[in-house]
Image (cartoon, rainbow, N blue to C red; front, side, top):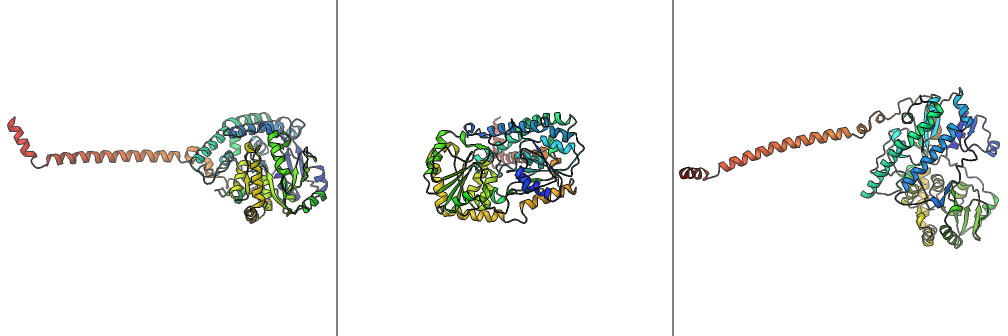
Length: 500
């Protein structure tokens, strides 16, 4: 989702230096030369950032959030060490006298790259390719109330009951504590090696972000309170232009009058690592469909014989989804592909595997445009068969998908224009400290009114105690007077004295 913004900035005459694992390809350079766009490539033979998920290792259960946190931390350390300690071009940049007007960095699982903002004394903004991480909301001072805002690790449950709120709150606390006391010390050590021990704390640097661009939209994930500089640019990677399809794919889709299933689990999942019983279930269901299937596989040939399937190693996904004969998208709930399906108005069957995919999948299910499968249930063919039959034969999914597409597209300006404006605005130096949340200057207990609540509780308790004591004493005195004032009580006292 980052590349369209970076290329657009270069097209507008800005000098853009990009440190990433995804440099522009030679064909892209030939097709669209950008003289002011400079790549520093982080990819090496021993660091693969594509096709890295082994499905035999995917386990789902109450401990999934722990596994996700472990995986993210491992990726963060690899990314930081690769870029800051092992890349000669990055080391040369750090030593150089380069100057910049603004820096854009990914807001995900590490703050180590914020050290560049300190090194070059440059304002920066962050971008998130998915729903904002809990610790990022903390960095910005953005409202992140777990009583009604689901964390990215909690899936999706609307409305939340007591159990959901409890588990969501615990997940929110776990994520923030893990990031603060586990991720950050490791990242700090790597950044200190690269930039020196005078580097400020990464937490301090993280709180200086002047804007956060988020790849979400309220139509999918729901409305929530945002600071004015936390800006939704969901669909930034989506081009409004639909390109012609390759001839063989176009013919395959054009002739599929009964409707087409488009099947893709993205670029990071190794389908060849899927357990045999699960893959057999998928193959059995897909081969028996009365529909054609366009399947993104890891090569151009499937190891299974299916007459209704065309397999390709690479597919122009957005252009495929906009073909009128594509009636269902079978994916894993990754936000880029899911957003493209929402934009195109295509109903979905989703098989979330990890990370934000659960939250994304259940979000669109709540909109009535998707069916969600559990990976653990995949080996039972009836679940996939029922989900596909529901999408293809229930017209409400198609109608809801069209409504969601209209809401998703209808905005004051395009996501790209919005992102460009914010980048140039911060580069012009007009934002300063004006956009910073005042809550970031308060300790956590003041920001959450813990001190105020405690004082109110203590004062209330003291008042209740005083009032109780006052009324209790008054009541006792009243009772004593009442006892003394009873008729016959004086005569009884006289008789008693006489007896004495």
